[in-house]
Length: 293
Length: 89
Ligand SMILES: Cc1cc2nc3c(=O)[nH]c(=O)nc-3n(C[C@H](O)[C@H](O)[C@H](O)COP(=O)(O)OP(=O)(O)OC[C@H]3O[C@@H](n4cnc5c(N)ncnc54)[C@H](O)[C@@H]3O)c2cc1C
Ligand code: FES
Image (spheres, chains in turn purple, yellow):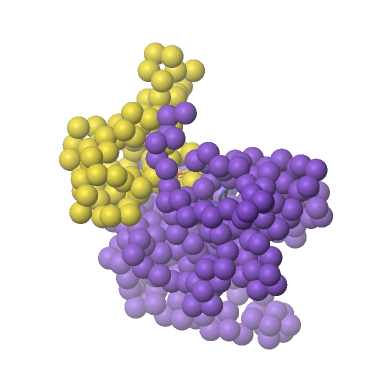
């Protein structure tokens, strides 16, 4: 295999009998918390992640930085942490599971906790494969994990509150955000008193992001989204459409930009639960989710 | 700074940076041509799930540039098709 030579840092100390009580797959907020809780109960825990640093998407950070909360950083000491190990296969065995990770490692455990996170949900549109069209999360990962602004003139589009910190972060790092195009009408839920009372802190957080957008004079449009990316080798512009409440196009206009950051929320990574034969259900938002064992 | 080459050009990267991030920072956006139509591709998801960003890195084809950290002296080449030359399928 051609890439065996690219070994990641090897910090594994296997328990004497070569197996763990619990393997936690994914070292994001969920996996770190699960590993910490299991280790605190005295379990032998192995925590495995494909990334070189712990933290997942939320606590993604650059090499040399540390963004983990101190208790979770401390909990890492109590578990075997295997960074830079991509899990590609899991098999059931008589005594539990064998996890196969690259580069080249097999790990035996009695119990598996899957905490592999999510990825950006995409609604394909003409031109979405052009270089310069990125997922919103991908643009955020480039910024937070790599210190790189994905482009010069950037259109941010899709649905959901995540678009706001992405746009604000890009502007603060020197990108010119030509607009945030939100396909939905996020204020609709404000008419529901229960939703309102349960989400007060989120509403303040959203208002803070909107203030940051205003500071950089970034236009924020609702019921609007990118429906086409133009260009031959790379993005040179987008068509932005105004939508009615059924997401039917009402009108269109063209905007010059070299980059699109697009995402319609997130959908769980279900590869591992499906490989294990877990029962799957369709969630309220249309996402495929694992259920059962 | 560490240095590597991309299609013969000299590129600088910060320690710990991925090949994909360093290429974007240097103004490059594509480093793969699709199998059928030879269309340009670069980073899409940025987190290792879509496999759009495959490149040939120091002789090994099909490496995800968004995950692979630059090593000093890496030779990165635009990957054509499946990256196996005439045997591409
Ligand atoms: C690209 C992207 C960027 C995001 N950025 C932000 C942000 O900046 N702020 C924010 O609030 N929310 C962000 N989110 C939303 C994010 O899903 C949640 O905030 C939160 O990180 C979810 O926590 P988690 O622990 O469930 O999963 P994650 O944080 O996604 O962690 C899952 C971990 O599992 C690992 N993993 C997955 N599959 C494998 C495998 N096969 N082998 C080994 N390891 C694997 C991943 O490397 C990752 O570290 C982002 C989501 C995405 C997809
Ligand atoms: S950009 Fe999707 S795998 Fe690298």
